[in-house]
Length: 318
Image (cartoon, rainbow, N blue to C red; front, side, top):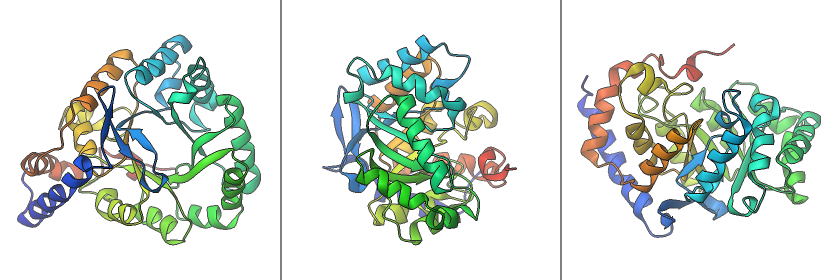
């Protein structure tokens, strides 16, 4: 499964360009052995590994287990927590709120997301999230799952932007961003319409490089505008399609690939203490991939990536 010479050269050039970001002064530091990077124009320093909010709300986990995972993550140097208003009908936010008691809130950069596409629903979801998380301020509030062609227009023209700005002015949120995983063109429109987004969340993995590539189409634009980049779906979605079904790479390889990109943090869903410890080890021992390692991994995945089978969030949508 080789890649052609043009793709190889492109990959090599991209890899060379990454080294100053992931090792450069001002972008990387360590706290408790955990690498921290700058979150774009926010100037916040966030852990390379981020706790994914969806998994900690699963029914298979007890509330006590979920809280233990989150607090252990913080104790090990993780300070970025992901969540969303819609995850498990609010259970993820409620559990996270309980985990942030006893002084943990002060140690965490807290992000959640709004699914509403009009002013009324967005405002209600903000109040719901603040109540469930039991906090006065959300550090980062993102428009969630912008995946259809009509959504950028709705967000910009049906009151959502005004709610975002009002929430920031009132001190209920500190920074604003958006997420999505289906079409890079939609991300591009969200940026080009002109709002001053501080962050963007997108799928970045060894398959994305080849198919509807956020890495190649959106990542450079975000960096140029100094928008903090949050990597997600590094394993190909839930469950991890790349290691579990495609059998093309291990979990540590997938995470290391995403961590070697010029991203601020990598979101990972971790629904067991074993998964958490494995991912913390990967983050704490992280070294950027060499050009040769990156080219080999992309060559291994090129052919199977081209139809999107193992990135279902790009191809399966109702």
